[in-house]
Every structure is written in structure tokens, then in C-alpha cells.
Amino acid sequence: DVFGCCMVGMVTAVGGGTIRDAVFLSKRPFWTLETEYVWMTILTALLTFYAWPSVLEWQEERKRRRIREGGETPESASYDALDGTLDALDSVGLASFAIIGAQNGVRAGVPMVVSAIR
Image 1 (cartoon, rainbow, N blue to C red):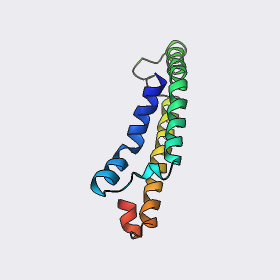
Image 2 (image 1 turned 180 degrees about the vertical axis):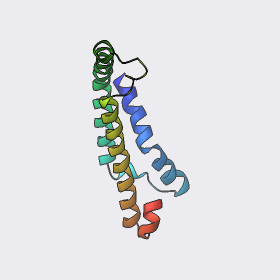
Image 3 (image 1 turned 60 degrees about the vertical axis):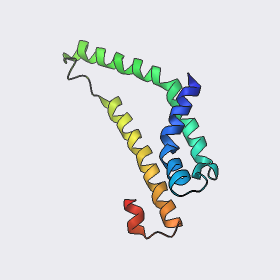
Image 4 (image 1 turned 30 degrees about the horizontal axis):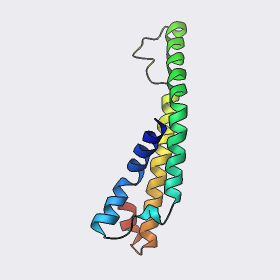
């Protein structure tokens, strides 16, 4: 269900930082002060929940068409442009969180080198 998708997305997105803040640093979790993390997570989870069935259907249709028209085998037709696009979007999300983490380190007064590897 959509609520479960949002909850899994939320735990995945802010779970590690929540444990760091609440357990190790004994302070209020970061996302309670910076709510853009919550909204970004909910929006992404909703978009994924509603788009994913269509994406899978479209991917299977493209695979069947390439096998039928191009003579490809099911193994060779398993990775296509859609998979590359999903990988690229995943990379954008990963880079976004890495940049946000580095900015938080710099904001906290940590040297840039430490923020980059933190």
C-alpha cells in the first residue's frame, strides 16, 4: 500500500541519520528541524509507488518487442535504455544525499576534507 511505501522510503532515507543523531549524538533528529527531507522522501515514494507498475509493464513490452523484432535472446535483452535511465536517476539521488551530507559537515565547522569522506 502507499502508506507502507512511504514508510519504507522514510526509514531508508533518514533512518541512519536518525540513529546517529538520537543515539550517538544525543540530539534531536535532523529531519525534525529540516523538514525538506521528509517532503522529498514522501514525494519520491509516492511517485515511485504510482509509476512503478507502468515502468515494469513498459520495460517488459520493450523487452518482448526487441526479442520479437531484433532476434535478441532474453538474456541479451535484459538491460536496456530504461535500466540505464533508472540507474542514472538512482545516481542523482545518491549524489544529492552525498552533497547534503558534505554541506552539513561544513556547516558544523568540520574541515572540508573530513566532510568529503564523512
